Structures are given as structure tokens and as C-alpha cells.
Length: 371
Image 1 (tube, rainbow, N blue to C red):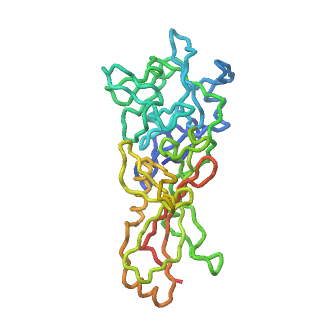
Image 2 (cartoon, one colour):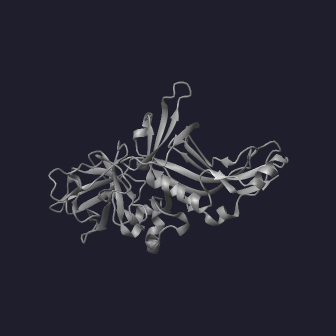
Image 3 (cartoon, one colour):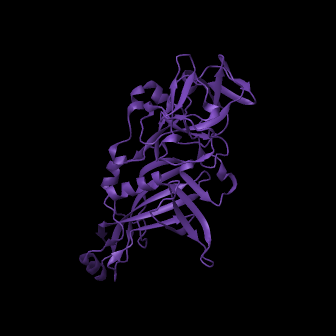
């Protein structure tokens, strides 16, 4: 999951490129670079030109913005080839921006597939966007660095025993921004560890409410190759960003007659979902909502293991445990008429249309207060 940084800030303060998120963020973390109005004079040439109906400006510096469609032009004999490929560059997880390591997504209509390098000696090279994304696949990581020539870049696989797809195989590339619209993103800062440890104040907005108002303690973005929705609806096949919040609230709990409390619950599209901590061959875990009558699969969300493992890591570091045994004192106090309230942390994920895709509750049974 990603926090964001403005491209203009990275250019003004290059030391930001070598920093990573705080240790409290845990694994599978990174920064996305967002384009802002200050970038145009320093990052691109003043003029724009048209080639094959693509309006573009040449990039001169790294890092690459994730919210711009970028056209890659192989340079042949010093001139830009008209055969370009448009891509979106997403920084590799757990790497500083200064590493210049990226996942490459063909745009548009990538459907969660990314560029994959081919092992040296293999006859057929992969095409960009032909392979399912896997967060642990080293052959899907590429490094970009400036060439000695002005406004030229080189692209190569991170692993030395591989070669780029044919469309990226030129020794030098020109990279140009396109005018196409990609999902807008705001600034998000990841986890606020200090705010999270303070816990929300217990205050019910109405006497009959069973929970306090949510307190947001973390914000991230997830690029769409980490998420797969089934069935696909409308523009779901296009590149998009998912916004994720981590929220805290106190929720009234019914502990009477219980010895063991189920401490997590997932919902997709506001329907109760089942999930298991098992991953398929592409590294995804499935959240499945079933039709109440037919018991057939109604909706499904596949989350990359990088997202699921980070969420679980954050919860476990916060003291959460799966299906916690309730202490006898808490059960006795609940039976005496005192209302127990447990801390619930919730990951909420929204899609491009602001519809809630996932809601995942984690009950922290070690955090209990009485009213």
C-alpha cells in the first residue's frame, strides 16, 4: 500500500527520494509520486507536440509520476521511433524512490496484467501487459535510469538473467507525458502511528448509539493491479486507484454467554464475505460474497497478498489476535449490566466511483472499556 509525495517536492528536495516509510508502516509499503502544477516548467520541455494523436511533453528527470500516462519511444539512430507504447509506472514496494524500480502496466485495458521480462535464451519474449501481476515476481520489476544523452533513459529488468519485452528492448528511450486522464489522487500520508496509539475518545454522539464516530488513523492508495473485482462492471477494466482508510471506533459488544469471540469480519459491496488466508498461484487471496438463496458466488474481490499481509501485519502489531478467548472478568462484568465496548479497527476501501468495495473489521478484544 502506498503513501504519496508531490513530484515538485521530490525535485526540490532530492533527499526525499532515498527515504522509505516509517518502520511502523511494516512490509509491502511504498511511495507514489503525484503530478502537480509546479512540475511543468522543470520536469518537461516548454513546448508540446503531436504524434499519432498523442499530445506529449518530454520528461527530463526521475522519478516518474504514477498518475500520468507515459509514452515510451524507442530511440533509433538518434531519432524517436513513431512506434511507441503507453504505460503507467508504479514504484516497486519496499524500495526507495531513488532505486528507480517500477512495475510497468500497459494502458489502457491492462486488466491487472503487467510487463514481464523473459529469461535470457528463451525464444519468445513476453508482450507488455501479457502476464498476471504477482508481487513476488522479480521478472516484473524494471529499473529506469538516465542515459548520458539529454532526455534519454534506459530500461532494464532488475534481474540480470533476463531481457525486456520487445517493445522496451531499445538501448535508449524517450519518455513523454500524455494528455490522457488518469484517476486523480490527493495527498495521503500512510499510517499516523501516534494518533493510532492514542485511541479514539469515548463519546457517543447519541445516547442510543452502539458505537463512537470513526477516527481515521491511516490513509493509503492501492493501484488496481493489486485488486481484482469479479464480475467486471463498466470501466472496471481501466486503470484506477483504490483509496484505503484505517479507522478506529468503540463498538458495544454482546459478550454474555461467550467464551470465544470472532475477531474479524469482512464485507464486499456491503455483503458479508468469506475469506481465507490462502493464496492462489498468482499470490491473491479471495473475498467471496454468496447469494443467500442459491449459495452461488455473487461478487468476488481478489486482493494481492502484498495488501492482505500488510493489513494483517498492521493489525497484529496493534495487538489483534484471531478469535480471541474472552477473559472471565469481562464476561461477568457484561452480565452485571455494564455495557462493554471493544476497540474495532476497520480497513475501508473505495473504488474509482467512490463505492465501497471492501470493509474489513478487526476486533481488538484486549482494548475494552465500560459505560
